[in-house]
Image 1 (cartoon, rainbow, N blue to C red):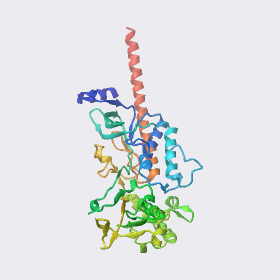
Image 2: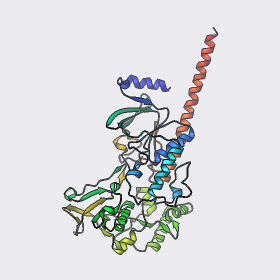
Image 3: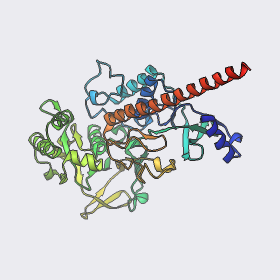
Image 4: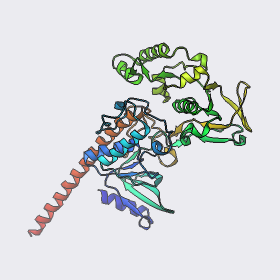
Length: 428
């Protein structure tokens, strides 16, 4: 069956053998972040071969190269561990960036996952005539770049929700003159000591960058353009997330949202007087429907109360060394940090429009967004963090393993049948 399909592929593409290519006896996984590693580990446990492609030169490149130094996991470690291998017992409840990277590296080593690094996928499309996925990459080795193609029966998209930075188009930003960086390039507030820094964005990254700038004696102003849910990371010594998960087992979502906001008010007080207006939709419902994560406060709110972090409204325009806000106020600033988030890059390389939408997310909502047609899968697009990615990985591996075992069984049966025919013919 596979060879017949391969011949069809060659028949319709006369230049096929002039390019470097390989036939993968299993899925190709695009992305060696937590989602890709989790999927690979689950496939390994099922005895299914695979190839992992990664455009960077390391696993979990977002964590290794595009996160700030003070970052810790926002949720307790039991909600962030990948399948089949828990965190070391001596890790704290909220592991640091370095500890999480060490965990991922040990995870890859434990399951003998060896991604093909420096391979950037240019395109992936399903060939209906042959029944194969064709994944074309650019391989970078030293200063040399070469094209390569992988031919496979199934494709796992594991590039994640945060593959590319979102860079807003703000009037006058090019004329500002000072340093402008995205939060992915921010490491520490040390070099901003004594500077007036405008932080654009008030999500978890914006809040933490502002806090870090304060701790390094900078003067941050944080732009809060829209409403935002701010929750304490812990409520009376218990993880807020863990408490919400516990309540969801017994109560409807709308009631859990009400209770979470009451508890947040008891712990944090009224935050609207500091310029932080809450959305009308509850934090959990907003996360489920829009993918907007509530901010888990780890100290920024205290700095906002004291005035060390200045909360300002939306931006109208930039000018030389200055920003004008929508309320007409003008601020002198030295630097700008764009904590404006990330997006999926799937539409830029996956040539498919049925399973994925134009925004790079599966069209089907959780928990149905992990499997498409013709052997296409998505891992890590649930908007439910690492626990969602782990759930995807286990489902995907189980599904692929079943198909793989069925095809292997059919191949063996055909081989035996041919062998028997050969024996019977030899008797004449």
